[in-house]
Image 1: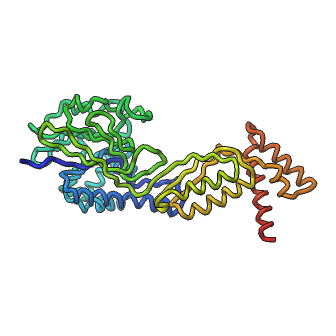
Image 2: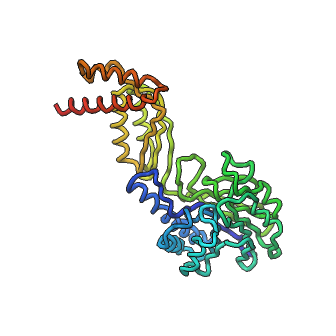
Image 3: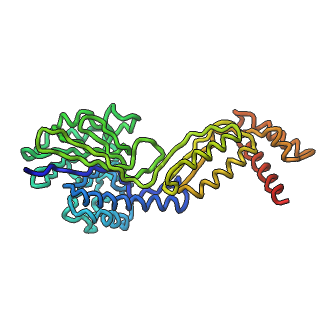
Length: 379
């Protein structure tokens, strides 16, 4: 009896992504980790002895990534010497000059690496496995490229796997781009045993026998189950396709909503941050809201600075956080005469929610308060 066909389904590696919203060394480590995660995928494929690894588009962040990046990516794949099938996505579309043409020109495409750059079946595993690709030849398509699957002829008894990159029509939890749409019943129409998809960065069974693998290494603050691989097993009987989710990602991107009004809320925030496991692997975004005075704001800044040193990356977004100078804050400044009048005017401007000068006045008060506290600490 023949062994079941097993594949790993992955997508959206986006090698070469810069992460410009993350500063300095933290971004460099996140970029490097994407290659390390590819090494992890190769090692996992080797240990599981799968028949092939399918990558459903956006292998690279764009077609202009450096030749060195192409070489590093292929090298990261080298631990698994079985079959790789790489599909162009919207980020790395198969243009006349692209990462795909450069991979070939540089001699980086070995016999076990199949570039799915043509809309024609790729027959593997002694004709037991047929990959039906829908490569993007440009960034945006208004027609459903997977419609070609319906007419593709494959060997009798071969497992038919569609490989595509785009948005399944009317199924995604959030509206994706209006381009590169895929029919939600394509697996049925094309008599597919499985439809392997990329573009949505989270792991999701979107329709019968139709899955998004998601990016294997999380890359944004969105809670949609990224950081996985899919191990897909096909029995050559009437048994259904089996899909197993395998955790793969290293970094975790977490967004927390935090409402602040008083000093006790800062204590609660610090406790919440202390409960997060593996802080060195965490990228945290705090969405701050509420209303606090200058004294509480200064303590908030100190707490965030302390935690920034513990997490891989920590940022606080405070556009929804109102800073109000209390009377106690004003007294703490200890100013008299015209300086006191200027502070009171800033306080008045800061309280005007719809004023274009409100934010600047708030910032000026915070700076004055911080300077006053620094002088007090030194004296």
